[in-house]
Length: 458
Image (cartoon, helix red, strand yellow):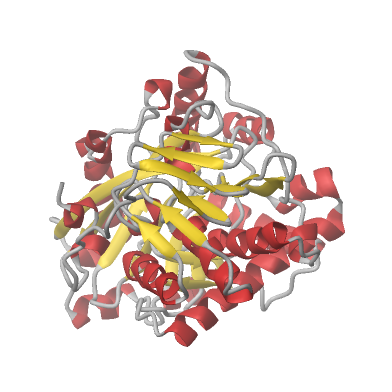
């Protein structure tokens, strides 16, 4: 396997991606972490920072950044998969707002660590512009701002843009308005995760790569190379979680796919905008997301790849020509300045983790010592940092503002058994696709999409 082929991000690193040595026999630790993506590495980082005496082991099946951490859209955002109203219904308005404020602070915290550790990950805190390209989408933009105001968020958190203001940031075709939040930074995700792995090693954390974990039990992580014994074992495997025994229905691995263009000339960028490297999206139902990379490309992705029966995750699922063609078409529709043949140089994809109630969570079962974090639904670049800080407090027995947040020790319901799981996830994708098509055709909001969102608890 050539790890460089997994994404544009990994292909552009100035390193050979040679795996670190694997585990070579049984070992003891104070904390064993399964997964060397953002969640696992942030947890190791904050634990080692707080208590350098801790013996911390990170176990990774492939290399650090092999999963979503090395393949995502590069948004370090304050987004949560669960809406503020849904959080408020479960936990009250104040705790919901606490969660959102913690995510705002998380973006700043990641930027602080990147600077302090000297991680050159093309960090640019340019915020996010979400475009409205129809009257229906403009209505959603206004509703998003009204909801933000209802929960005490101000213009400096989310502001409504008119057509000229939105186009000044991102000059996509047919822009009628949008919203802007400063709470997001564009990053090179593979540089971030690889730099984070080096940072934890500098603090004495042992990272074993090419070491698959076959089972996680109280006090142990089992691998073909040996057993790691630790009073705390952290599961930080996100979209790959269903491969672990007993976790088949914990999250649904849903694929998100991306394309990247060739570096674009400055004359083209002058017509597109994104001068501050704002991340961008729009108010359609099927999520799209993009950024202007530091080397002048458009990196653009979206959902739409099918969920695979039995929560299967396989390398060939990373490539869906139909979805890549759709992404290329949408990119050309958004930015006609790219010309009739959008100059795509890289295509890739990978699985993300979706909990049954669309709610990310972090927790520690003190009776077993088993800890977990995940279910980010694609918003894990930022929330994994908050998860790592929170797990560090939980594992050390520290009571803090972080351990009081409403996602702590939340238990999502398990997904339905097959074939119900396959039917439900793929039916949801079809509903959202058809809703977008119907709204373009009729100019009216889709009732089916609204009903589906309510079913999910949004």
